[in-house]
Image 1 (cartoon, rainbow, N blue to C red):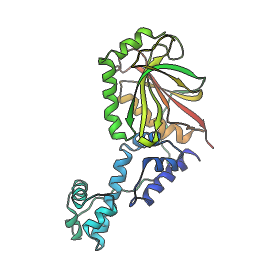
Image 2 (image 1 turned 45 degrees about the horizontal axis):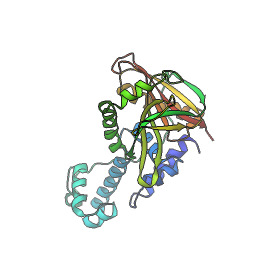
Image 3 (image 1 turned 45 degrees about the vertical axis):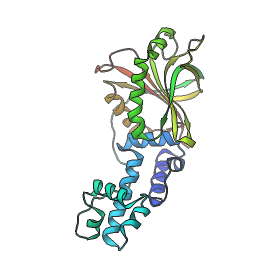
Image 4 (image 1 turned 30 degrees about the vertical axis):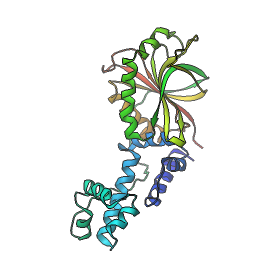
Length: 292
């Protein structure tokens, strides 16, 4: 399954199951992705989370059905995944700007959020610096923490985790023992290490290359498996330049290349320097495989 057909299969699955319980793991499986990786790519490409998309599609269909059929409000609430008419009414009003009862009058204006589909269009034309790198297994010393696979939640929690690592002296300990050698030198690393599907969580870590020796209780040594990597260079202030580069990677590079991401793992490489400078350079490493 290639990059394009996998995404389209996931979009079709969502649309055909909007009146049922939708789990991120089941949606991601349609594209042969892990839950975290799919939700992350979805957010990068679309600009909103998977949960937001499902919610807006359900409310679009609910509005249309209320306006054109004799379905009761309570039945529409249950059909589209709400526990009560009250919670449905609040969500409906926020989206449509009117109440479900007003929608049933048939005279009110409703909002519509269209379904997603993958289309190949002539776009891009931008220049992107990247290289393909084969790298054996390596070890990193990190502080790690579990985060929700829900993009809205993790986008809020991850910056807080970086802040904690600066204030609790984790960064100081990492810099003091870093060998300043190896493929990443003295750069700070942000890593998505693994997932915990049963808990809808992933493990994120902040660290550096491991130089051997004892490890403090709050830190751990993790092994990064051997992979072939696509390495992308980003120039500009963080996080704006990095977010823009990520979008280009997933919206232009992968759809037009012979490669596709092969796991939810990635490595963000942040060298020492002024991260707000227009000349700051960092990297994104993504494990890849050839398209099938």
